[in-house]
Length: 558
Image (tube, rainbow, N blue to C red; front, top):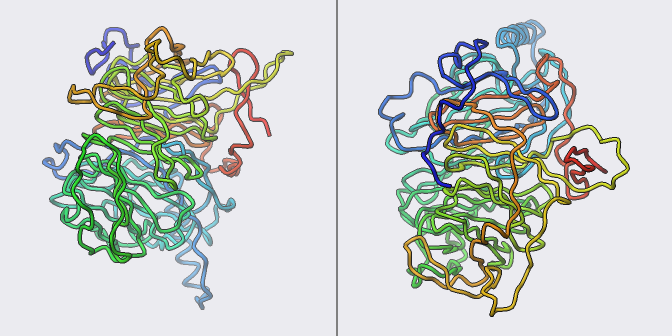
């Protein structure tokens, strides 16, 4: 099942001459077809040429996040008519030159970790309210970035890059360089009340939290106005592997590390506190330790596992935290109760990524066994395996915006989910999971049967030793799990893939080398400047499920 990290190029379709950037890469085409229609390559993003070659050679995989800045409340000020007209004219001209800029439209989006953001109301594309970028590269001309805007944030080498989501310009509008350290992970929260909405984790273990708007307003290439946590690895010197704001809890965020620890920080507290935690006594047991002093930061340490934590994701309401690690286990925790609820081991090797369904009922995982695993919270079991990748699966995500025509049948409605995955085989795969086609494995079995669903057992860890894993399950036998085939498989980059996002309008893919591609959904790529207002992402909630009739064609049911 585990093959070479790269797909067999002899089986990949011939290239399309449509785009210069992809025509030179055999097998990489500028469109792909799905049951709902054709997706077209709309635009690409990449790093600026100013990033040093030694930085690009660093072993850091590009991750991508979508960030929507709401319009900043305006303060009354006196501006002469001539000055206002001049500034407005510059913004309008620049926006036309870029083809499409920020500050004039809203976007609904779902992140790669399964979350969906809230959006402000649509704004008409006039010079008076256009607050997006008006220049090229990292030198904006006159924009204050006080308006509404949507951006892609991604890391390459020693830099964090910010690109205008709507612009056709390939190079970023902002580059933030860290010099001797490399950004590894980042997370954006548009609902951060204090404006510090961007978390960045480094390979040195350092963690920064800052204002995205403030970075855009600054003309330099250094992080400005940021709070610095775990400075110089004072609390934990291992690589920071994942970061996230805690949903619905103002001020708290978490940072995962390569030594199996997750730290909970309070950004309202001083970040210069001493390490308040005792040494970990048993590296294979889950344990939570709290800071001894109310003034200390971080406020808690969760020791999750032995070996690296490769990814984490909160359910949308913040009730559960899922982690995946080097030992091959998906673990699900009740965040408020600080308890391990359930989980399961991969079929083979490490798990690299995880993502929640919008309704919190399912978790996707992917990793070194080339499978996409679907875990059911209700049944606490693996209910499906997606089989189709030829190498490691590096990112998974549900598509909360997928909608297809309602079939003209008399069959009852059943819940259907669309999700995607990307891997080191350079492929994007799309999947439809129809719950009427899934046979859920038995939840519990007699102890004497030796079933992998028995909760208390010994399991082999990443180092080959037998460990007690508590409420975690063995990997199920292949014959016990229904297999899914993808509805679409397409080679979208020449390099191994590392990132995946779903937006209302498109699918965003990212490769290891820091190149992003935006694939417009059917019917959404005709005119970026005249698109219709987006549906607020909060409409896709637990009360508005993806449903379908027989055949897996879905629609949204109120």
